[in-house]
Amino acid sequence: MFERAPNGFFVNDLILFNSLRRGGYIAKGFVFEAPDLTNSPIADLNDFQDQLSQLLASLQENQRLQVQYFSDSDYKAELLRYQQETGKFENIWTKRSRNERFMRYWQAMVERKLRRQRVIFYVSRSLENTPRLMTGNTKLREYYLTLLDQLRGEFEHVHKQVMDIFSSAGARILPMTDLDHYRLNTRFARFINVPELMQLFRQMADVQTAQMLNLARPKLEGEKPAIRSAPATPPLKKFVQSLVERAHRLKTERIDPSEDNMLKITSEGRKAALDLRLMLPSAKDDPQSKVNLAVENIYRIWDASKEGRLAQLVFCDLSTPKDKGFRVFTKVITPQRR
Image (cartoon, rainbow, N blue to C red; front, side):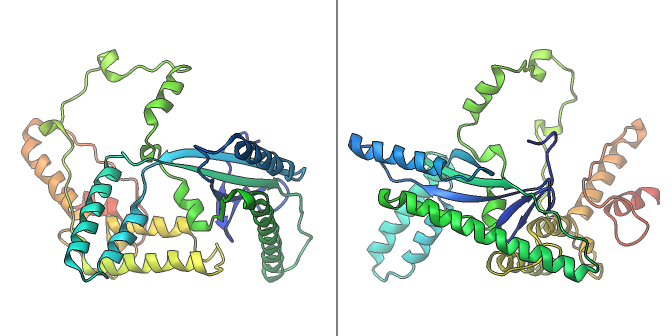
């Protein structure tokens, strides 16, 4: 469908690829919680198969269905809710029993011994509309907002249709929000079947590891990466809380993506975690910030190795050099120039 990965946007609980006009695509995800048919009779299995066939038959000519299946061990929300309810009990033995059960299942979750299979339906279609020639950004904005409302109504109809198909089976169909769509785009490291995926990949790929090639690499001091932890200051915690509130508003209110979106929130969170002055120029220079701790360590290594004229490679993927404002690059190199 695409020669290269398109730009994607989360808007109005929909996923928009490319642009909101001809050549773009619109999609929405639905969490499918199927009934447990492990010990069901053949008649129930046949009925469920018929319902799947009805789902495929219900798609319009311009609609496509994509199914995402994976397994994870993420029971964090359920277990934390269980632990929160434990605090409401007054009987000490009830509390002890529930706390023991909570710790046992939490440890099983951490060790990925709990397994939950999940299925996500994505229904998508291409966009064929071409906006008329309009004068002024206001009219153009009204046109796109109206179009988004129409698309949202269209997918609400899809949700109702899918619920009608699977209602007799006891399945739950939950429409995904912008936040749900964002959370599902995560790393493979969270999946518990990575070895199986790697086996499939290696059937068609010639994988050569560094050990197999016997590549010469410098040894790390201490034989593992050294991690320096920077404490979160009260101003940083306050800023992070404002990001949480913004994310909640995106989930509960209709906010123009040009004003705020999840990508903007996460980017600002990364910058603030690196150095709060990247987001709040008036913030104080904290001696225990990540940048200052890094500068201190860089200088220590330079001072210990300057007689041998050794070199250091410092990498930072945020805050590139610019003419105005606070920049991490300037902060790092300035002490070395003095």
